[in-house]
Image 1 (cartoon, helix red, strand yellow):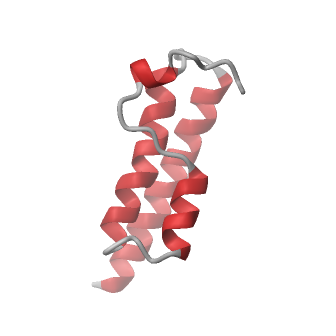
Image 2 (image 1 turned 45 degrees about the vertical axis):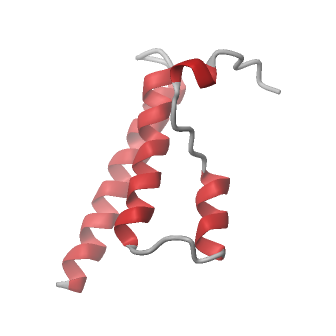
Length: 79
């Protein structure tokens, strides 16, 4: 649909927010670390596929940082 015909050639393990949402709703994650792995994979794939300096990469990096900050806070509350 978006014309990303080479995406699967470059990204070997695709992940997206809809898949994460569905996995949460169907309780497919064994723990928070499995969830975090998929979230990190989304940002890593985006940064890998798109060119540095692209607005999409900048947004992915901001969301990645925000996720890591909030995930770290949640983990620190559990200890």
